[in-house]
Each structure stands twice: as C-alpha cells, then as structure tokens.
Length: 191
Image 1 (tube, rainbow, N blue to C red):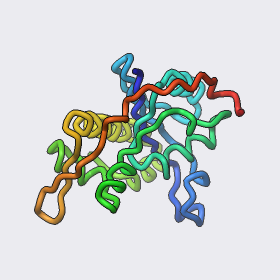
Image 2: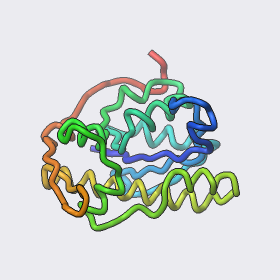
Image 3: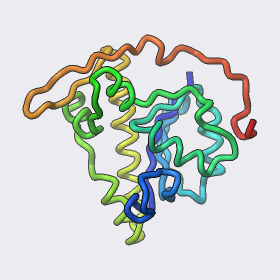
C-alpha cells in the first residue's frame, strides 16, 4: 500500500482573506512523504505538476486536520477531486474518540517526545521574507511528525496527549485504516 502523508503551508492567513475558508488561501509549500519510495519532498505551488504524480500514485492520504484544511485547499488547485482517494485525518480520528480537537504539537510531544519546530504563522512570515527553504524544512518536519504519529497509532491502537501536566491516552480503532479500497478511477479527470 502506497501511503502519502502530506501537510500544507500557506502564503497568507484567514485574517488576510476575511473568512475561515481554506479555499481562499494560497499555498506556499506542500510537503509529502511517499511510503513506496520512503522519500520526503517539498513542492512549491509552481511545482504541482510533479506533486500530482505522487498524489495519484497514493493508495491513501494521511494528514492532520486535512479534511477541514489541507484537502479542500489542495483540491482548489487540482483538476479532479482528491477527496475520492482513501484518506485518514488523524485529528478527525482523535476528535471522534476524545470528543474534542487537540493540536499536533501536543500529541507529538506526549506520544513521541518530539515537538514541532515552528508554527504556520511563522511560515507565512517566512514566505513574506522569501525564506522558502525554512518553510520547506518546517513543512517536511510536520510531515515526519504526522507520519510518526500515524505509525504509532497504527501499532498501538492509540495516541497520547497532555491534559495540563498529565499524559493521557486516546484509544483509536485503527482496524480499517489500511484496508484496501479499489476505486479504479483516474483522479485527474473531474467526473
């Protein structure tokens, strides 16, 4: 199964576009991990022709808050519908189990003893300053953390998070996460 873990950084913020609608934002960098090649790659908006090849090879997509943010934003640039690809949104799975949302930094710190290197607000500032390599490095670190969190959840049937100073467990049913889905479709054609 070819799994593609992905994360997006933007060129602007919701306050810049006046609404909490991800499709109004502009992408600066998309970071991906492709399991079949065991590679991490960052793509600028201008390099999406190459990104689509990676996404279309995916048997499943994995993200954090990706159903609400990353997938709708990425679909804005895509000729088909990326929502047709099997997808696991880790934040959605956490919310379903716990009843509330928790940030990736909290989960990564409690689960992996690893923090995030920055945040999305900093990435927008880096874009404005032309510090593209910083954005790529940060985005790919988020992809790595997301991948490691996914792998931990799959292996252990749950994740950890901090509630104040106390570390707690989030039980997750991962039994169907990697069940194959035969869609038999070409994603670049808008059916």
